[in-house]
Amino acid sequence: MSSEFHHSIIPPFHRSILLKNAKVVSDGEIRAADVFIRNGRIDRIDSSISAPADIEINAEGKALLPGMIDCHVHFREPGLTHKGSLHSESRAAVAGGVTSVMDMPNTVPQTTSIERLEEKSALAAQTCATNFSFYLGAAGSHLDEIKKLNPADVCGVKIFMGSSTGNMLVDGHDVLEEIFRAAPVPLAAHCEDANIIAQNETIFREKLGDKTPFRAHPEIRSEEACYASTKLAVELARKYGTRLHVLHISTARELNLFDESIARVGGPRENEAYIENDECGKHITAETCIHYLHFDDAAYDRLGARVKCNPAIKTSADRAALIRGLLTNQIDTIGTDHAPHTAAEKSGTYWTAPSGLPLIQSALPAILEHFHDGILSLETVAEKTAHAPARIFNIAGRGFIREGYFADLVLVDLNRPQTVAKKNILYQCGWSPFEGNIFRSTIDTTIVSGQIVWQDEAIHAGIFGQRLKFER
Image (tube, rainbow, N blue to C red; front, side):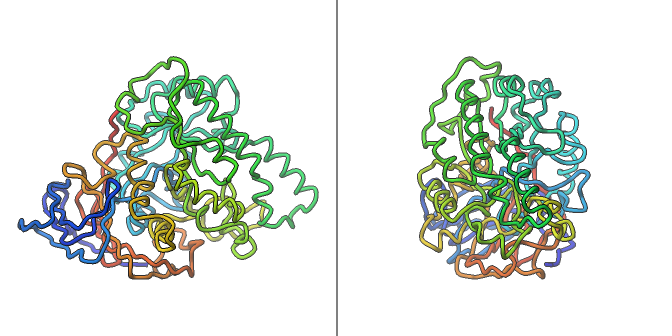
């Protein structure tokens, strides 16, 4: 594990940084430029800047991208800190080129009240190396909390549609309709049909019992289960004009439910204000994740529980379709669904090993493999990892390399390979499904809100991100 510097390198907002000769990737173009950062923000972008700076970085030959905004992480705090914490997982995040995260509500206790949202935010401000926001968890008994949300302070509401996590399953149609009609912020949906999954589980339990192999996972948590639930979510969003972001799309079939310009339709909502300042252009959007773009079902025999996640990793044909979906804009964002479990927890049988993978330290390097393969341009990588998340969630002042914006930046060496190995894994759980993989890019430097947090393969300690704000 990389060591930490035990002194403050850049006290918050008191130093300037000059990046020289960078290949700046933003707003659909690449240009050679210098970037001057002052007081946490991008002060100037120009072909040549000679202003004095406290820190100067030679970026010659490297790509400067907006830091990845990961709209989908499970950092496990509070209550599950034996798996990971805001401290540990956010440090792995910046090593992977991620500068902002949106954390999910299935912690202990669950984040189903505004009070718990504020408690998590206060904790993150003291420990999180990335910028941060937290989803409120939807549950039928917490509808009043959803209605009371301040759209400027909260990234969204997470809704588990037909796939239970604790007691957060929401599958009563009347409750679903009310949430889709009334939510004042985007809904982020986990879509799998619990009844279909339960029927498949019964078949395999009766047929194979404890000998059920991990390769059965995509048959149990099947394409049909994903499609039925996603279809319902899209139908409700169309009916009520809801801003919906469907998480972790894993099948080719689901792509048929999305296109590049779904118009906002539907009747009146209780709170239309949050979509008035809307740069997104469509109100139903989709995410896929790095593991669906990297693995297919052939990995189950080799990695077993280490690639068991929900929804399941599907076929090579699904993987190819998801990559195409990024190019057609049926898929808008790439996330990680980072969800660590301990190695001991993952050592069980198919029925006892929990679902979820630690992924975030390999976020941008894994995505950039598709650049090296000639599939995704650097401009598309910036779009899917930073620009689109910023637009979809109306994030204030982030997601682009623009003058006046917060300096959330990642300097990438596209010509320096790195091998994922236990000695360089920062996750608290200490393992990765990518172990042994050689990625062709390395994260050189990560800057969060104008502060260097990752450089020379080490964390700069004492640097903390900011709470995200939203222009709604």
